[in-house]
Amino acid sequence: PMPSVAPAPSPEPSPPPVFTPPVPSAPLPQAETTEAAEPPPAATGAIDLNTASLAELNGLRGGGMIGRAIIAKRPYASPSDLLSKRVLSRATYERIKDQVTVR
Image (cartoon, rainbow, N blue to C red; front, side):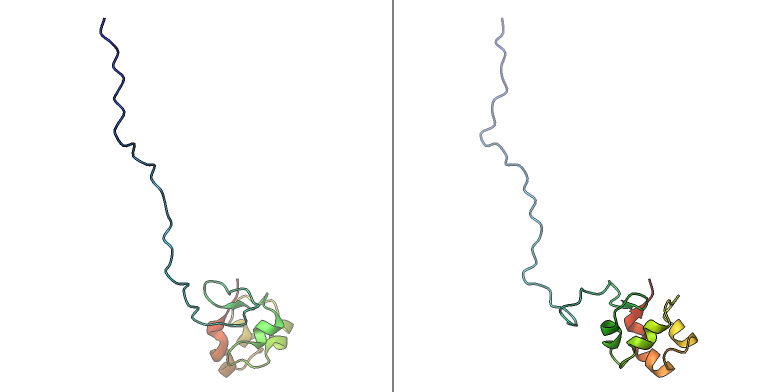
């Protein structure tokens, strides 16, 4: 009878593949640092007119102390409601419109 031949073990078993996630060499610098205590804004970088705090609204660049007026006229369907509801002047709106959103 022919002897059963077991497959010869390979001389070097190949190690299992190791997945190492790429590690950035340095932490990415933040483009803008706004109040470290606040959580980072949404991907757009804009704050929500309907949910932002008084401090966040007053902290908008070029807006001044506008938070109380914005909160008083909530809710908003879009940032342009700041004009249609006569919350802000057009000049102020033009300065802050890129910093705000409505979700």
